[in-house]
Image (tube, rainbow, N blue to C red; front, side):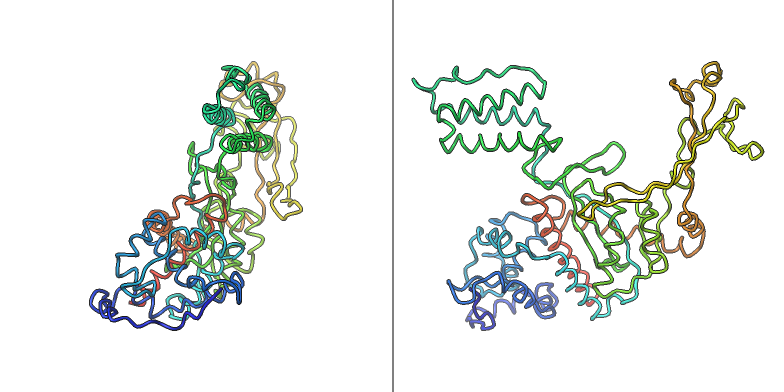
Length: 495
């Protein structure tokens, strides 16, 4: 249960802090200038009112997490340092001679006390309110939006490698039990076939055999058998297997992929994060522009412009924020130039024939209009089918293409030769005109300010890789890192 944490025990050694901790030390300033009591208020429902012994102060436990964000380390190493580092003890509200917590308590605090708490929104809203109150950011402001990748704790196996790994672990766990009534030869033989279906059949036969002779009831073997069963079930829905169930593959550049999560971040030009969301790695960046703007507004800002890269200039975003927030993002070149099937050079529009002409001078004999396709959503509100611009496909005579001397690189065989042009939506036409203005060019210069923040969050504050498993753990890690970053910025501007 929660105790009375307002009373402080006087210590004859407390004067050590006056000697070791300077007046301008960030820990002293944070203790003096930040009211952390909101943590107790938010978590009071997670503790019993009148039963059990007094729990460790939730504020102190939260400060442990902040220290972990500032100086990434394991729980055990963090607690060891807190025992000997006087600046840590001062920040935690401990006397110099006081003992520290057991490392396992910090793990329980993350998994049990912080469960079902929207820590990310809570910490951002608290730090943004503090920044506004201190005049560090103005209520009327631009926000810069971007997404950065975060790695999963475990790697992803392709299905057949995972099955072979689990089979090896099961056979090793069975070794101590080889005897008169249980021989290795009694188990199905595993071939070297690389076919996944054959491997799945073998794994199922191995499970049936172990369950039939009772060895699967032995705890050491039972755990491995359960993991193999779980892996077989996952393969019905997933293309990879990993302990980190929430992580997925995403792209971080041409030909480059990662396995993990994405942090979608909105910050002010002063590098104060005012909105954030954590998703699995495959999520589209552009889908989170509107939610980030709405979150920033909920946190007390009047958003004038949302500055971002080309991934955020989709028609849905432009329409949703029209007359509310200016979207300062360049339109994707595929949209501005039109997507071309075939070679680009040489095809041009013949206004007299109202059709396209190929490099050989042949006119398209037929054109087909593909209507604009709106975005659709499933029952959970997630995007089921993305928006697609209207297109016009121009068809050319294949018989002429087969005999054409310029067919190399243009005609690839088949019954059709088409040249497709994307029709710009009105929203994109307006955005292209906006790109030409001095206002757009001036604001786009602010876009690069978010890159150092992403690097600081990942490399210095522990957002680079999940310390546990699941999106809940990654979200909590991101929340503490962002809060710590905001606090550091506030302390810096205030100083």
